[in-house]
Image 1 (cartoon, one colour):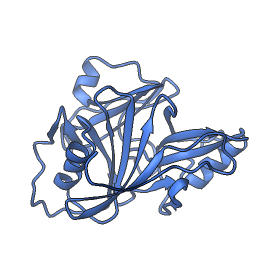
Image 2 (cartoon, one colour; image 1 turned 180 degrees about the vertical axis):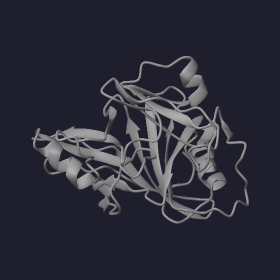
Image 3 (cartoon, helix red, strand yellow; image 1 turned 90 degrees about the vertical axis):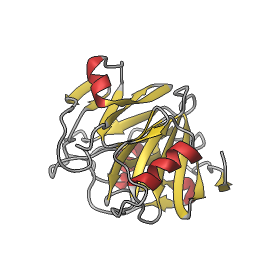
Length: 246
């Protein structure tokens, strides 16, 4: 990858039996970003929303504590898609193979309805970002899936509605998948950027042919290897990896 600044090798957490995914920082076109690259052969990804009592986890801390009780730990994580005030997902949500919310394909207000939007689908050692209407026509066998929007990169091209000089700038986070589906890049901007800038990060820097915007404003990252645990308002879906504890 071009212009990657100071890769930070993922450290082995004191309580974990395996290394967390590699996380680091990159300066792209004048803006700083933080990213984590996940090799799905080593670290399959998944989603979480509700705890055993049926309440949303809401935070990385709550989720990590629940995993600790099972002899596990949260590896890396990020808010995993848009949600309603009660933190229920706006669009498609699949957890452990169970569809808890259907795919939404209609155009609508806000970023989610800025079609084409997409689905991030996790299938063990493979993942994909699929345009939502294509997903509806031929759903892949996702073990975990979350829908958000807009798509950032679609088959190597930026979303057609993005403007290079767009004035809407926020902290943004998203996810991209390698061409062979074996590697996922999670990234978050460290200062406000527009969609065009954020999409080019995934297309030109990480070279992911398909990438999906997850959210703005509430965007946050959990990456212990670089001492990052972003605070904020309670979240809906959380996406990430799990580590075994010694």
